[in-house]
Image 1 (cartoon, rainbow, N blue to C red):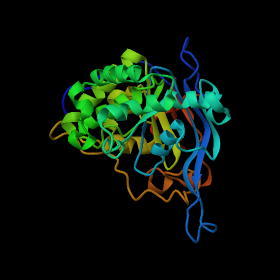
Image 2 (cartoon, rainbow, N blue to C red):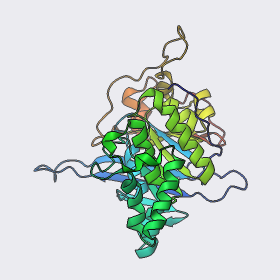
Image 3 (cartoon, rainbow, N blue to C red):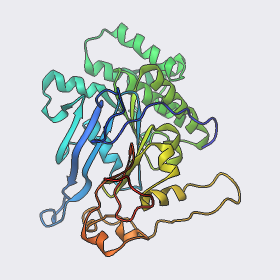
Length: 350
């Protein structure tokens, strides 16, 4: 990533079940024991094992902060985002907004909740309707919500366009006439249209040129500070998450294996998978030491995950007990949790 380093927002969201810092309010959103299994289609659907995309995830995000989810492709992090925004329903567990389960909401309450949680998609071109011009794309959520006049909607669109750094002349352009960075600015403006409390950002800069990524991240940080927004950011790029997130959760094959603040996670990772992800980040200094712990092997199938610790088939420290029992999440600091039988750091006393 080039350009200015995005300013990190402030705060310290903690995983679900951790004690909140003194004086902090209750979490804005929570995932409590969330599981999502998919049944494969086709003629062998009845006999095939379900794909375990997410398995028993507990997380919490506090208002005005950013929770970053990292992991390899196929680990379930994008599924978590889709569960939060309501594009998918959990097989088990609950997604809660301000303590209220989304699944229990009905009618007007459910519709209001939908507008409080919006999404920025990975591909800023595929996520925009090519038949609509920019102004109509941004206005569409306001039209769907109702309760406003055309003049009010147009005034809101004009404000949003200016806020995300686009010009009024671009309101009448189509997505194909914009650059990748401009399209993602449109995606952010559309997400902001209904004044949401939470934005799920699914790989928001991975499809952009390196030179544009810092601009979009700095824009997102500025909008967050101005509106006290909460972000749930999904990314495979640890560099982006390190600078942008207040708290990081590392996901492997459907489970959270470690979570901590960014500085703590990079300084003292406890899980071997986290260590390997950090070591895989390209070093910015020429001649700096190469990676110390590479991830070996391939990601196992989510339809048949390994017994015990799911990372054991690729872990250099694996022992027989790793196949026999799943390691529990243990405390390695005030807001640091990891699930490993043979961790890289000493856990706190029980």
